[in-house]
Image 1 (cartoon, rainbow, N blue to C red):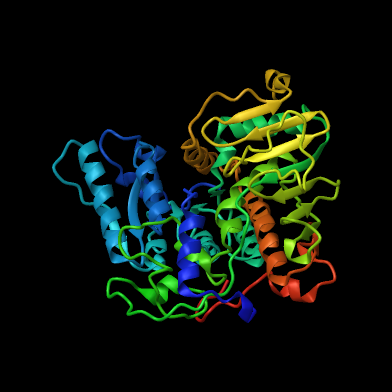
Image 2: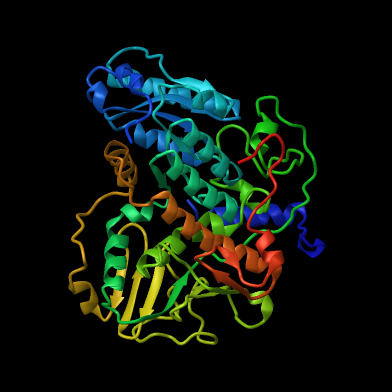
Length: 453
């Protein structure tokens, strides 16, 4: 990255706090099914799980999946000793209580994901590491015969995402991407209404969480004895430990590492990717994407702006500014866009959707019309249930690997546009930039030895 994008430590920490604060076939190995708990689902009905990465998000997944009688957690893996031992303790205490016994031993803790993946009694894994590990861990899991649930953003680079799709398909695995709004009723209804034409032809969509990250130069700090820093870095370039990248022990933030392009893409990949998935879904673009990306660095637009082939424009901005935007009828310009949600604006009205049941429209009659599907009110935890059901049926889950890949690419395109500081043309069928060799090189990264996909 260019020198003018190097930040000092104070800038990095300030950016970290502000950006992250808002974010919050048949299974391969049958023998695992005989290891269940008394009183749970029948062994033949149970999916055995391993967890790779048990930081803030990983711990949340452990807590949720412990509740389901059709699952059993057999192993947890993290390069931070406190985190893996704490999660092992959480699992074993929970199962001891469920069995109404004083103790339970049956969850192993691993430092190296290869050791967990080598277990033939584990059917599926939940990957909640940093972005740098998502692609490689998924490919390794697919080769090991495991089904996968992988946190967002699905991949660090465009190339890794496409490779994940290829390997999941090649090895006949089921993969759910952690873009969980696909499993929530307000988003299902909103996207159904948009696709059904209830607000007419959509010409504009708006989402929030703008901004990517640039090179950082943090001072080396002593590497904690309880942290395997080399494995933490994994395929990413070597750089010395600094606590801004990893908060030892109990996690303080969701994604501290996203301040560096070596590990993430800032707000666009950590947060806005949820909203991009909603946009792709609502516009019926799950198998495609935008064709043009214009960053504000060009001076042509005030905010990061995407254009789809049909002319629909997508902008990343906290709210509508009368200086730059035409305010839709019925919209209060003081309204901030819902985090992780989207505002769809058509020639016959608009729909604004967000988490926790937020759904508004203009005119009001839009919401009085039936959507394509009547969805009962369901909690976001159904994203896991959808995955578990798909594992048994061997059908695609609601946010299959290919869907997650395309939504993640939208975020990555925005990062590359910011980094190159120019308007980019994108071919969503060939997954390449048109006439821009430099931008095309940014679709992938060289992995640090010995790691390779």
